[in-house]
Image (cartoon, rainbow, N blue to C red; front, side, top):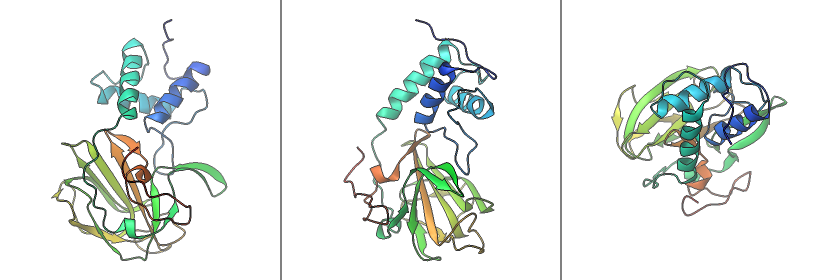
Length: 236
């Protein structure tokens, strides 16, 4: 049975199913990203996510979901279910500190928000290092929400990571960095430079595989923390 053509302005259960699929690929609305909300309405966030899927898969990013885009979504969903082999992660610093907020849904200011990463409670000014080789593809010294941000991608392995709420950044946009290279210092103390929107000193870590969000607790050896996150041995 063929699936309906969906575009901006479409509504109904088919749109909700599309949004569920996009959410599974990591295109989820959170305090930083204006992504997908499952509301059965094909709005701006859903269209932006569809265009990203199309561009990533080599299709014309027109934001219209037809047969080719459905096939691409299904293929990317299958890829997401079997992530690439995990590179040797050497986070060095975050793994020594408790998890204060895991990845997933939580309430922030009385509103349900998706937290696309893991927060580690650590003193401001703690040195941070890169877990693997890569290139700095984005950074911001004082983002209103995420504070000091460093985004690194390794295009060979197709893995990447993001550090947020940094009080100091020791790399520059475009830098090629090595595993265990100094990245910057943690922050998050409210009212200080690079804290962004924060209620206390911490480091936010998010991880991506093929551009899809991967819960760090599935990869990193995390100590039991405030949320009781178990320490897995490998990606499962």
